[in-house]
Length: 414
Image (cartoon, rainbow, N blue to C red):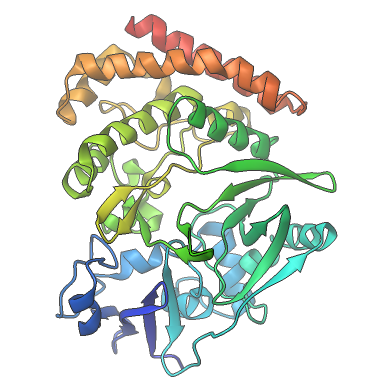
């Protein structure tokens, strides 16, 4: 039975995680890490010699794991209890989001750093089997964990070729196949991410890839960088981790982060707070205008760098409201001026939000108008020149929705 896990950041030991006799999470930093590094495991777990007991650290580690149905399948495949966070981390925590890795103490740490090239048909087979084998959990040599409820596959991508990672080899891209019950999610996310970049949001490179007729969304990992032609992991954490909130409570109406909390977190913790407060404000506005009701606290992150925390590039930008006919909840994950119904957001709600985050209402209103006009100015050109070859109905619905959403915002705030 595994009793203790080694916690590493980019192959350097940070500390140890264990369960006490009551199966409570306990974490303690290595003294050497405290003395030589300025980077904490989490903003909610500051550097200190005294151990974090009584589940003080559990929320951070729980947020490294997949959620919902993916978690259920992985737990079943590995013969583990669904609620056994520690056991899941021991089995699949070798390559998590950011630079964190967890390995059983006393076991052999991976030394190999290899990639297995995949043909298109081999990759397609793996993608199609993800519902039964999420993240390849249980396969010999694979210890991958990505948070979230959607199926994903971390890969190495170079020179138009995909490879699987083995041992300690870091991935540099993530593949997201379409969501089965929703039409055009790949095209939807790719368009929204590209649109975000066009209007000035910081987003990673992404694209659509055709796997023998199956379109998948491919996105570059912002938590990876090239140093001397070697891929290095960058430490990061989402806002639920930074605020010590469990993943099952990621929505504001369930106790998750509010936008006011997010702004306060950026304002007090970011190494470039002025720029990052404006960026996270643009993120909220953009998500509102494209109809992304799933912009919760796990969909915005910090990069924890030696010089201090900075807001990470944005990800998971997708219009969810165009799928209202599927019965998806349309209420905003984070309220605007106390209001969670998108249809009810008017000038009053934006002005209330401005007061809550201590900025001038006039400035916030002008920011909404600027982004709405930018979207309208680039939307059709982007659609025709880059996405015109995709005849997906959801893309047409998306364009119509975004146009109407921006027009409504411009009329109500001008």
